[in-house]
Amino acid sequence: SQSKQRPAMAGKQPKDAFPLLKSAEILQCLNELGIASSEDDLLHPTGLKVQHIYASFNELLLHRKREDMAQPDFEGLQELEFPELHEQSVPMIGFLSACQKLMAIAGVGDFTMSDLIKPEARRVRRSLSAVINLAKYHEDKLPGYMQFSQETDALLNAKASLEEESERLLSARRQAEQRRAEEEPALQQMEAENEQRQVTVRELFNSHTAILNESHALKAKVQETRDASRGLSFELLNAREEAESLRKQIAPDPRALKDELQALHDAVALEKAALKSLEGKCSDAAKGAAAIEAAEGQLDELARLQAEAEAEAQRLKETRRG
Image (cartoon, rainbow, N blue to C red; front, side, top):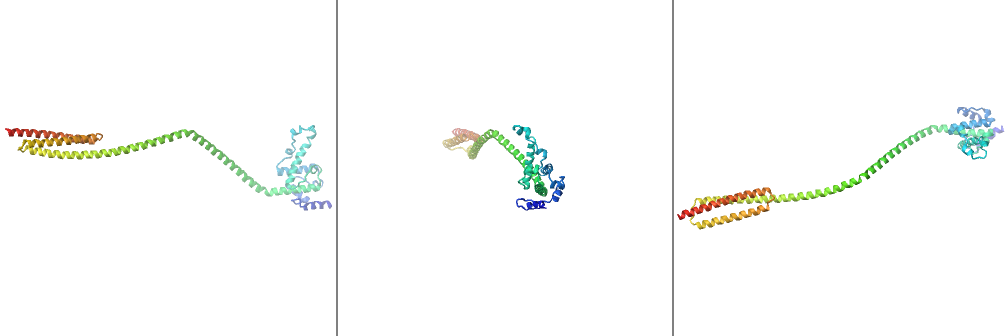
């Protein structure tokens, strides 16, 4: 009776954050977890039995098997003076370390080698209450943990995909920068050629503008030539009419007729000289040259008429003498 009250008092101690279970509750939980045990195992625990129970909880909660925890560090053993004396103790120390880690998580901070080799019923009850409470907490949180684990895996996969995409983009960027660096000399050459072409275009535009202005000036000169040609044509027509009038008349004074013919000849010579001067100014305009040639033809016709008029005057003079 007194031994049963001591665990209850221990359960009320504030240092333990877990409830102290009864033996029946402990056995029920152990059976539900698939850990074979009996009430005698709790009341009269042995080292071999409690080690089996603690190993099962390590595998269940920490996913570590007893044989993995018992593997000795052979490299470390070789450093000892008599390593064969420690081949049995080293695995037990590894198992104790794993159990202490489990108990610390469960809330038991004073778990020692004695709890594995010479267990006491009171401490076994307290330790099992702690790990069962941890198992129940683990079971309650397992769905959320699984969900968080799945979300974490999904986030890790997404992170890996993003890292791969980032690496791909960085690689593409490095390749693009490398291509740009390789193409930079050609680009600079093309820019220089483009600037030179722009200068050439501006020069051609200015030249075109100058040619256009010169063309307008030549057109104006051609128009002046045409106007002058029309004026000469009009004078030529008047000269022909005057010559025709002279044919029909007998000049009363041959000297006056000769003076008039000389004046007409001088006027024609002046007009011809003016046309030749105008022809020199318009030598680059084809249409102006054609107009001048036409005007010269008309002047030649006028000279011919003048010669005819002089011949007619001479004939009249001789007729008068006769």
